[in-house]
Amino acid sequence: MAPSTHATSHGSSHGHDHGHDHGHDHAHEAHGHHHGGGGHHHAPKDFGPAFAIGTTLNFVFVLVELGYGFAANSLALLADGLHNLSDVAGLLIAWGALALGRRLPTHSRTYGYRRASILAALGNAAFLLVAVGAIAYEALMRLSHPAPVATATVMVVSGIGILVNGGTALLFMGGSHDLNVRGAFLHMAADAGVSLGVVISAFLVGLTGWFWIDPAVSILIAGVILFGSWDLGRQAVNLAMDAVPQGVDRRKIEAYLGSLPGVSEVHDVHIWAMSTTENAMTAHLVRPGAGLDDALLSAATTELRDRFSIHHVTLQVEAGDPTHPCRFAPDEVV
Image (cartoon, rainbow, N blue to C red; front, side, top):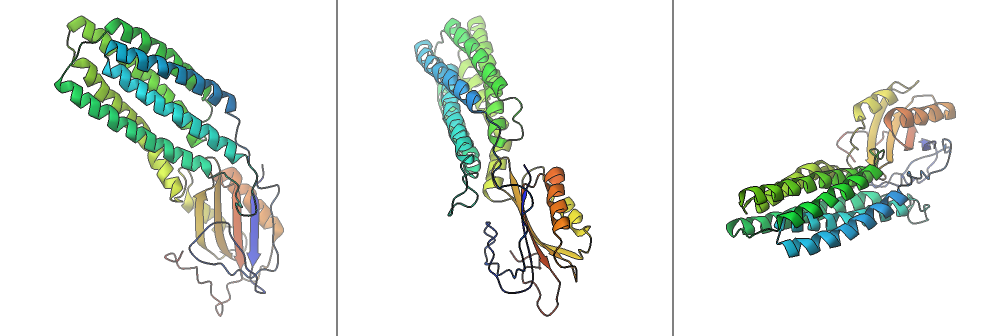
């Protein structure tokens, strides 16, 4: 879908709302407004069936895993079950965020509910940290008091986990462009690997009789979860803080805008994520004596979408009159 664009140029006084809080009021003076092709709604790819199937399979498996974990006295199995329970919650949150993202903008929510996907990613990162802490604590307690483990039961249940988690991960392949969907894929793939680790630990306990292997593997599980989810958590925090999204090169965008015909200066550039799949930006272009140019704005927004993954663009065009300088031109002013 084509990006939406809002351009203003200096003239008579007119208030303009970017739809993004820069920490100040923009009193833009506008002669006219340009909206480059298409509406504002960008529907994400429908992973609803994948979430429905994956959530159901994993919830049923969590009940099985926790039940047999208690019966077999296996901390590794219980740790994996608790982590899978957090994944079920994460899948539900991400699924709900995708549904909210399809809702149309309202008078008070001018971008709709797209940002819900960022909140979901942040919530999932928090879930994982809590799960890692709980697993590590219990494992350290069990290391000081190792207990017997029903190795055959653990191996069978964890073997089922490899199939469930691996199959669920396959449902989310092809969603790498969406942080939520990519997170679901990586979590499920990691869980399949963790279940494999539990199978191996149970086999080694049965072979050697060393019960400390079970909590030791639990600590390794916690480490794998933390390592695999750290980048996802970092990205989620960055998006929530309106950082430039990963994969978007601000310097190249500024260089491109500066190369547009008649543009002598580019300032007050802001780039942020509207959701985990859509990016937005605002910028001021100084074009002395050029006036409005709808053709240039249309071409620029298309290029920003196709080359730089910027889906919603707001450009303010200024004449560069030194008697009326833009107060947002300095880099340190936001």
